[in-house]
Image (cartoon, rainbow, N blue to C red; front, side):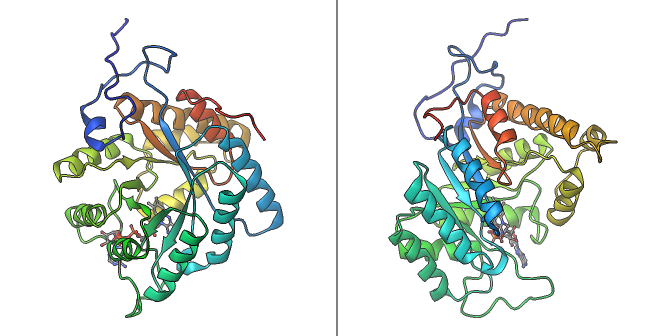
Length: 319
Ligand SMILES: Cc1cc2nc3c(=O)[nH]c(=O)nc-3n(C[C@H](O)[C@H](O)[C@H](O)COP(=O)(O)OP(=O)(O)OC[C@H]3O[C@@H](n4cnc5c(N)ncnc54)[C@H](O)[C@@H]3O)c2cc1C
């Protein structure tokens, strides 16, 4: 059956949640003409601990740089444990690549002055985008310190006072495990956006319906900023289960079945992983989503392949 393709709305305008929700519900595979335009991508990396991991990260950055992502982000270890490594990685991206970096910054366990200083240092180093997060205290520690920003909302407000940063924040389609209620979590997201963030990136999820329902709830709450889906291609299913337990993410039964019997077979796991993630992004794309954030885990291959399936092609020759 050949379904007529609806024209994609408003090419070239900034993606907003409203456009995703009112855009075509069914899109063809990416085609030079008539199909969905290639989506905007962003890639997340973590700062390396060793020289070998640094080499791996930079090979990953160089490969994914060719896909001209909208931005790339570098995580910040809990409680600021990677402060210098995150800074060094972000600044090297500014200096040595064509990429636009976003520095993750968490506020738990640090004084406001300290956080403001880190942000000012980023601004002086040419960094214009921060992923602003509350972060978590180490297990068992509840004292957040009186002088610190107490939440991501306060951090966003603080960053706005430091400089004119572009600010992204976190969103939880499956509700943050410590949120008082789903509504409180949604209100909190809206407050972060109202305080000056322009985009939310979601926690990784595997059940796309949950995310699409979350978009409905965001729209009903008056949120119009993009709620960019965080895509985690899973190759290590045991690790994914641990992540899901910590974050309250549902692992659908079908997904567990797909990885059944593959514990000792990494090669097949990778292929299965590619199929799962590719199906997930295609389903979201068919529902109008035109921006994706990839948790790369500093490995480029799956992300590169999924981006290719989405219609993204290299824009610059590989270095
Ligand atoms: C895209 C993305 C990137 C991330 N990057 C990092 C990173 O680089 N480094 C890192 O350490 N973490 C990172 N995280 C994890 C994040 O720091 C945690 O999920 C943290 O618990 C909440 O941060 P937030 O900015 O969403 O907080 P907020 O927006 O302040 O809170 C989110 C929700 O959680 C509730 N909540 C959070 N903590 C508590 C608490 N202690 N008690 C009661 N309610 C609470 C709030 O009420 C609210 O409903 C990331 C998460 C996402 C989705």
